[in-house]
Amino acid sequence: MLKKLKSSLGNGKRRLLVIVAFIALVPAAKAGIADILSIFQTINGTLRQVGGVLNTVQTLKLTVANLETRVIWPVSLINQARNFVAANEAQARSLLSGIQNLSVSSATLVNPSQLESIVRSAQASNVGQLQGAFTRVYSSVSSPTAAPPLERNMMDMDDAAAQGSLKTALASDQISLQMLNVATGLEQQTASAAPGSAPMLSTQARVAELENQAYLTRMLAAQLRQEAVQLAHENALRKKSADSTRTLRMNLQQILAQPSGGAQ
Image (cartoon, rainbow, N blue to C red; front, side, top):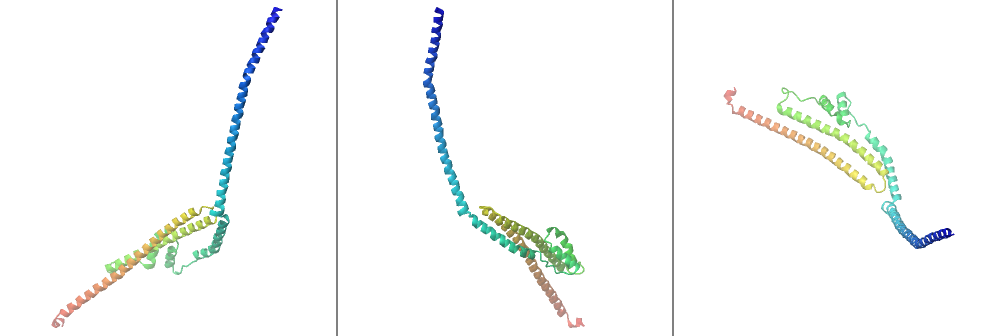
């Protein structure tokens, strides 16, 4: 009996200790749950604030997009400009192609026809063939026994200036075709350009315009050289005339200075 009583007392003590420990842990558990709920409430409030900010940002983006599509780059006006460019391109393309492909060759003989074909080929690679074709049409410089040195020099210089101008014109024609291709490409880009890309297309057009101005300057320089050679040629003729007049005057003076008896 004593053993059973001691055993029941021991079990009672254990149960009492468990109950006391549970009672002691209940406030701590309640405090932990309250903290967790407080954290959840804080997170929820933060997310609501972030959501409000995101809604404000989205509203601002929509406002900016409406401003760009309706005021800065209105889609209707851009489409209208595209249609205008496409209509003008379709109207003028056939006419420009007809003018560009129009044959203006007029020489009928073999050598002149060959020279004209080279000059109008718009291919700078044909420059090497130009001199031979030029010589066959206009002949080479006279031999020293056929013409005095002054006339031979003028012949050679005139031929050189003429060939130089023809070669420059040949290269310029090829460059002109390239610039036409660039212009056609810019037209096509303009017709399908995205809103806001006008400054980039304008920059490309400005660069092409500067290149074209540089080529025109080269052509102007070639024309000035041709004019300079022509002036030098005319001045050389005046010099030759002056030398001939001086020689004639000296011969007349020598004839008049001879005595009449010696003349008999």
